[in-house]
Amino acid sequence: MSFLKRLFGSEDSNQNRKADPEGFFVYVQCDRCEAKVRLRINKQYDLSPTDDGYEWHKTIVDSRCFQRIPTVAHFDRGLNMTHADIQGGRYISLEEYEAKEVSQPTDSEEEDG
Image: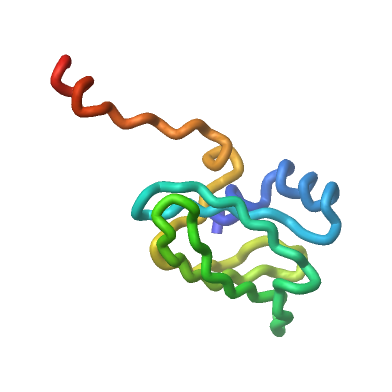
């Protein structure tokens, strides 16, 4: 639960929700190519009401390897993520999304030592 709060319960995410009253963002990273994806969830059109909050179904496709990443996320009435199932990727924080990717050494760099 604290992991999900860290991803979606920070002050930054609450400020983002105030700045965009119609939606909010989640961030995902592909397991295969490590591409990072930012997704905007529209509160009115993307969320399905449930007894205890909302549910979101999405198949995410990254722009690098085009892997399909199906996910189902559950949110409470305050739009805090309470549970998520994701295949082929993982949810990441805004900080992880904004962090520069670490470049992998090329073959010539590995040979030079």
